[in-house]
Structures are given as structure tokens and as C-alpha cells.
Image (tube, rainbow, N blue to C red; front, side):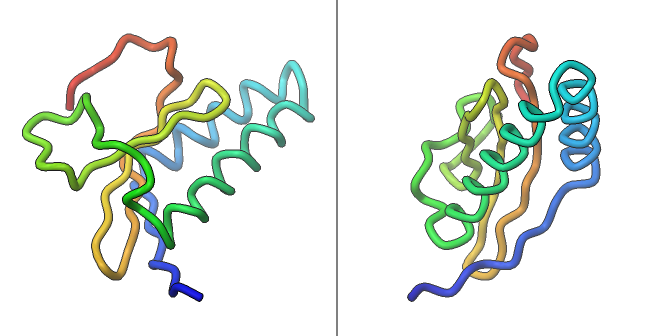
Length: 100
């Protein structure tokens, strides 16, 4: 069994996730739970296999270390090392794409 990397959330990414889940829960608590579970489950996978998802095409000067995945309409960008995975951004896919 592979060892999982330590998970670190950028404070803005975590705040955006919480804000998004709060907004979704106003309409459907169940859907908010589904989105949260899907994001957290995928993050759990990348803690062991961070190379699974492609390079983040919106990251300037990305040599391949910054990666991203999409689930339930959200794009999550992350970086990783041998010891940790850092969640950098959480954005809804319908938001205008910003290069960062």
C-alpha cells in the first residue's frame, strides 16, 4: 500500500470550497454533500497518485507540477511533492477561466 502525502489547503481554496458548499446547500443539502464527498474522495486519491490528472492548463509557466481535476462542476488545482499535496484553487467551471 502506498503512503499518502500530507494534505495542505491554501486558505483561499478552502474558503472558496466552504462558500460554494454553503451556496449549494441553500438549494439542496444533499447535493452539497455529494459535491463535498466527490471532491474529498478525489483529493484522497491524488494523495497517493498525484500524477493521475493532467497539468493545469491555466497555470502560467507550469512545468507540469501543477495539476488539476474537475468534478461536479468544480475545478480543483493542486501542486505536489514527495511528501505533500497542496490544494491551490477551487473554482466553478462556469467562472471565466483566469490564468494564474
